[in-house]
Length: 223
Image (cartoon, rainbow, N blue to C red; front, side, top):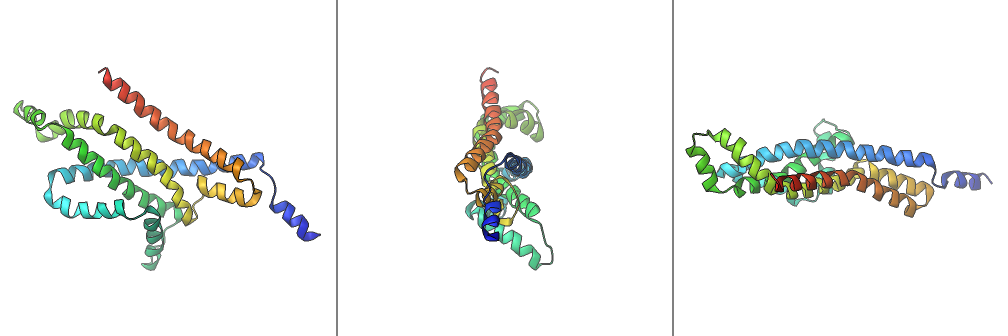
C-alpha cells in the first residue's frame, strides 16, 4: 500500500507550479546565454580584428579558435568542468558553462568579424586614409558601419545558435530550461505537454533577437 502511495506522489500530473519551475529554467537559459553572447561578441570582434591584421595571429590565435569551433561543445564543457578541479580550482556548473560558452561564441564571432572587416572594399579604406583619417578613425567611421551591416545576419545566426546550444550546459547539472524539463518529464511522465511548453519558451527567447536584427536591416536599407 505504501509503495502505491509513493508512486502516486512521485508520478503526479503537470501542475501550475511546474510552469513556474520551467520559467525559472528559462531565466537560467537567458542569463547564461546573454553573458556568453555579449562577452563572446566583444572578444570575437577583437579576435577577428587581430586575425585580419596579423599573419602571426592567424597561426597562433587562429589555431586556438579552430579548436573551439571544431571540438563538439559538449566535450568542451565536460573537459573544462572536470579538468580544473584536478588543478585544485573547482568551478561550479554555471561558471564552467558560462566560460566555455563565451570562448565558443568568441571563436564563431571571430570569423564573422574577420569577414566583415575584409568585406569593406580596399579602395574605400584607402580613400579614408587619403582624406587624413587615422587608422582608428578609419576603423570607427568606415570599417565598422559597413562591416556591421555585412555581418549582422551571420551574427544573428551565431547568437541564436548559442542560445540553443546553452541547453548542453545541463550535462554539468546547471538547471536551465532543458534540464528543468527533463526533471519534470521524469516526475510527471507527460513529455508532450512539457516539451511543447519548452519549445514555446525557446521561441520567446529567440524571437526578439530575430525581430531586432530584421528591423535593423530594414532600417539600414532606407538610410
